[in-house]
Each structure stands twice: as C-alpha cells, then as structure tokens.
Image (spheres, rainbow, N blue to C red):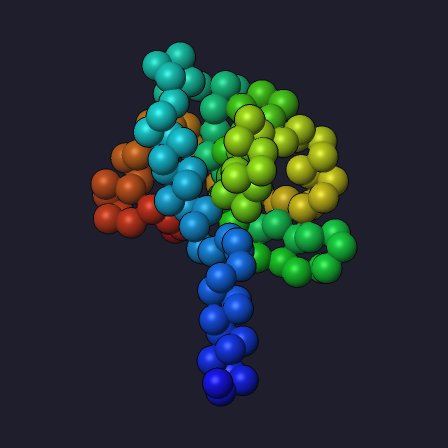
Length: 120
C-alpha cells in the first residue's frame, strides 16, 4: 500500500478532535442554556478570543463558554463534559477574550450572520 495512504488511514482511525468545531459547540451550549442563564453574563457567557497553549506556544482564534468558575470547551468536552476549572483553563491556554456574548446574543448573532461565528 502507498505510504501516504497508510498514513492518512492511520490518522483517520485515531480519535482526534477536529479543529474549527468550537463555534458550533458554543452555539449548541447557548441553545441548551437555562432560562436563568439566557441573558445573564455572570451565569453564562460565550467568549470569542484567542488561546495560546503554554506548552506548544500554538495560538489560534477560539470560542468557549464560561459558567461561573467553569469553562466548557470543544477541545475538552469529550474528556471533561462537566467543564474545566477556570483557573486551570486560563493557566493552560492563556486565553485573550475579544468578545463576550450572552446565550441570547449568541443565538441572535447566528441568525443575523447566518453562521455560528466568529462575528465582527
């Protein structure tokens, strides 16, 4: 078999997380927010910004949800479905928040922009 095909087949068989899924993920969480969280940034916020992995130095635009002292992130939702401590998340990924949205604003922005983010 062709070595390149073998390599691609191996990559596809691994349990990897696709990049670029963070925006749809936070929209889904906004849609699932409670009535109490829907318009209250202190209880639920979608954050668009940049994260930088402190180990690799890789920096990317990203989106995540903050609920009190917990962060919900696409990259870790499979292993940490109940969230990550905000302190640990901020230490590991050094996020730079650019914009914050309530669940309501997130859904409205999706409708207006006809996509799940980022919005300008």
